[in-house]
Amino acid sequence: MMKGCAAVFRRELAGYFVTPVAYVFIVIFLILAGVFAWDSGLGGFYERGQADLRSFFGFMPWLFLFLIPAVSMRMWAEERKGGTIELLLTLPIAQAGAVMGKFLAAWAFTALAVALTFPMWITVNYLGSPDNGAVFTAYVGTLLMAGGFLAVGALLSACTRSQVIAFILTVVACFVLLLAGHPPVIEFLRGWAPSAIVDAVASFSFLTRFDSLAKGVIDLRDIIFFGSLIGVCLTATGLVLDAKKAE
Image 1 (cartoon, rainbow, N blue to C red):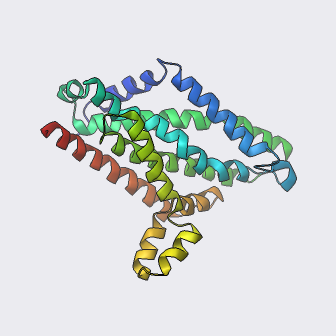
Image 2 (cartoon, rainbow, N blue to C red):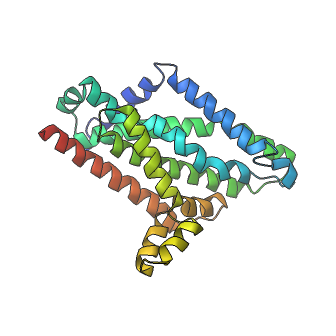
């Protein structure tokens, strides 16, 4: 089922660096991450007087909300608009391999951008004695959350030929997933919805899932959530591509 996954992965990952877009993305990501972490008016690292990266990871979901859709929007929309999707899917590779290869390439590219923030970790260790286990767990949670964003973006990119539309839909969908467990949203739902629905909506909150990981708390349920979301979205992406081929 995964035939051709490695070939698609290499092709897609190399494709990110053919144009300046990848470098612009990484530079913008690193600049914004640094500002959010160290700026006194935003992260307030020095004002808190604690050697940790809580401010950095606290802003990560909102940073990903706009930057990750910019990565995922081209996955399938570009192929469909350029008419190359038919060629790709007629090559001797499995469709599941193509879907997984594209997703893993985008995930690897995002992981590279996140990994380049390691000087912040080194700086925090120089300034104090942080809980490095908690920092490592937060990085793992960051990558899991990025995978969730990318999987949603891959699905929505497969639904349209326009990268702009794919970007907007992904931002909206991820925004909803971020706020699903936000207290004002939960309180609003409790006013008219059954408790089972309220609990179900709250369980889809990226913020709630990521917050515990960002604090260094490893909960298997959070890992299963992100893994299941990625699996479901990628499966749905394959079904959408099948439906588009039949049109």
